Length: 78
Image 1 (cartoon, one colour):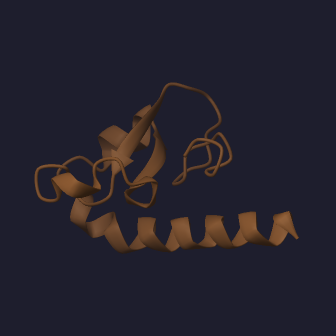
Image 2 (tube, one colour; image 1 turned 30 degrees about the horizontal axis):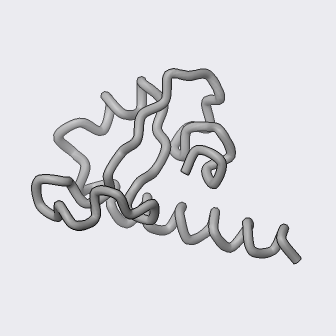
């Protein structure tokens, strides 16, 4: 996941650890996705705390970012 996300925060682009694994669909709501890399995104410490209690507002943003990152990975592999 960290490699897919370019070793940086997917929201602000910060490249300085610590990083957090953020589950897009919360583990408490969707336990079967807890190990699914497409349900996880890299966030810096600031962004991870900043979105707390507003996770659902970011869900579509994160899904879109993961699609873009995967598309870029695919294009670079060619």
